[in-house]
Length: 355
Ligand SMILES: [Zn+2]
Image (cartoon, rainbow, N blue to C red; front, side, top):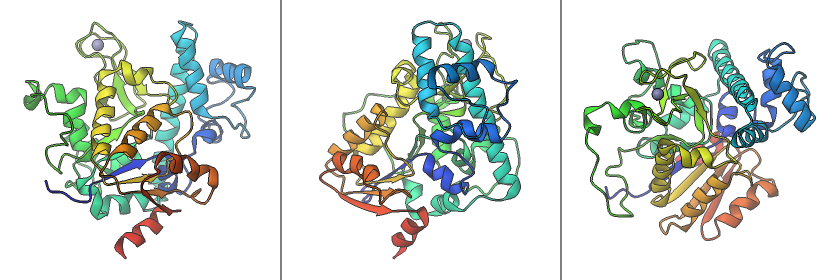
């Protein structure tokens, strides 16, 4: 305690894009990349291709398709809200494309050794050990660098450049997932805490993925003991069933424009509450590769809460679009009272930290 300089890192797609040297696509280029990587083709995902053509006037089986994948996902979720049964297949096809694409790109990055060192520099930086990382990303590049595989299957010995002083994934895994329910320390429910209490110790740092993850599998059977619990699985492409009720598990990926999955899944709600707790006591927010889309109402709400926190002194924005007025404007309106520092790359930011 007595910890001055509490930071919270908030990461968006731009962080993985920078780390992967532009191999990973942004949200408008997911379908284009999926086509180029031969994840989608004319014979595969016919239903989804038909849906996108009909509702958005775009053909996903070309390399000039440019459509915001979040909009597509949101449209599918709304259809599901109205109980349109055909949309179940659209959702599963959309998620399958994401999982296959991100897994393939991550493999490719490893094989070619083409990753840039941004995430590694980030994980080696001084601030990271005692501070929580919030991310809106669905990919598992950072999770893997934080030792994801080692926690999911502790017996696997594989060489990893993983620093086990970084407790982010470990704390997430043992506190916020289905695994936590089975551990001794979680057998009894904790005592209520006074409102405004920050986390007990600076070591309680987490990786909080607020929009879900391609490797999170959940049981959606409301009557099941495992209902809603998050199970990160080592191979996201495999199909899993619930060991309690034997129903097929679903991948938990939250469409940013809709709040329903956030409210509906008590475990996602917990993640958001943890994020809120961290943001509410931080004195600086480092927002890397996240551009705060105007339709991402929940993220806006979270940051607005952060802006009201009296300890907050500065926000640091790291983004290649840093000089574009439309990028910076939404942050300026949100954070009126604090200093805003701007960097176009993580490297620029890191250099400046040492100076
Ligand atoms: Zn179940």
